[in-house]
Image (cartoon, rainbow, N blue to C red; front, side):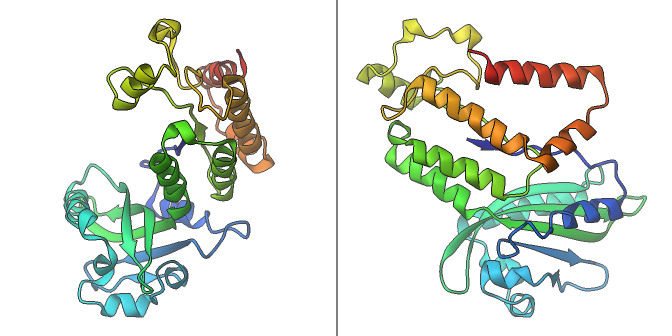
Length: 271
């Protein structure tokens, strides 16, 4: 339900990129749910972590660096191989300086958390990595919300679940968030189940006009009209906060951007 999108910062200088990451660390943010790190591969394999690392993982930066495999020791086995491959490919690819990934970790107390991470590379003119900076965020609450809905079944999602997602999105300090309605797309297992149960009727859905702001289906506990109103509420509560609205207006540079925002407004608030 929550889709994060941010302006591409590929063309910025490395210092600007690091500052963009650090700008997320504001008084309004919760310092218990994120940490930053820096690494200069040519000088040392020791990663410099911010103090937030202990609040997120239970380990101090020194303790992590003393582990046999460093931060890799915390990453769950299911994610480890994929992350190593992506990371090594990123280091060797001079055409990119930005890597975004998410993965599970096991904390010092044995609990599990999900991390969203953005890595920025400073490269030489030949593409060799000089230094790396990272910003990592604990996204466990979002994963729990998604897992909770998935475990119970989307058909049992409640208005309380949706409001919880809206509150969570507002707490993250994001510049952008999109709130999409569930679409039972033809061919998916859940679509077949809903057809069999009679909860949706194929002939009543105009598939050619289907968009994520439409409401072809709603859980039994919420009417389609109420679900649409909750989506509108999400956009209003998130985007009409002064700091978010200011950033949106500040980034409008062309007529095409104005047209896009107008089309988005119509798709969300019409019907």
